[in-house]
Image (spheres, rainbow, N blue to C red):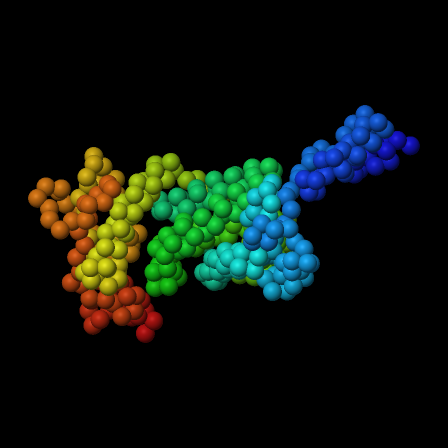
Length: 377
């Protein structure tokens, strides 16, 4: 019986994977033998990788004492950290490994884990699909649109074995778009609003979709973490109804994100960048101690339509006390940034003892918190 008939279910192989020293070895000998016998190659794809070296670029050698045991590394850092290290490297070149490098990778792993933990902890009140809302804020649509692009980008690069590009884009999304931005502006609503508050429901809806999309991306690289998170999802509908994270559908569908809302938030981020630079200077000059007590005056240097921001709650998006747009003429004590002139003052409003926002208070509590406290008492 011919080899291709005997092994019709497993031949030819989908992939041959080995070090780059096998072009004249296993790859070549397999190709020659298979071509003689079947007139076809024995594999559909060939993937080669470099050799593992220490942090100085030296080959692993017992005589040099630079050999790192996989068992010891796994016991110290976990399997998923090792997988993340492998996926983060450019395997087409020599691959460096060292304890300090693995500790850095462990830090990245912890960022991902903590982000997923935050999402899980915020979804404990979600018990039914009926609680998911259709109407979202522009910033919600923006963060979901970014995730949708990340999903497409990741799937394309999984097919091309560009795992390091996936890790780079994933960490950037976790660090800059989620932890430093979307989660920061959402915490006040999550922690201080009532469970029935419309804005809180919008954020919970976004977190629901975020979790499904992020698990879809990380599961091939960090399967143990992905499975652990999946097993601890605090609701039982939608993508949570399957036996394992590995059975998630190929496509995660998000609410429709309007292009004009995406562009609006992109324009806002330019304003945010300038405001944050000015806030940093104001803190260094002891004008303010925290961003939350800042009153901001903004003047546009360019022909930017300020009216486009009228639909946004800029005070909450910037995590400040007050913001006001002014004319650029005859302004003094403004920080000149790239697109805007920004003046930072300390607000005269007092800080609410419950939510810590600077608002008009009555008996040390803002109107929102007073309403909630009255309901509770």
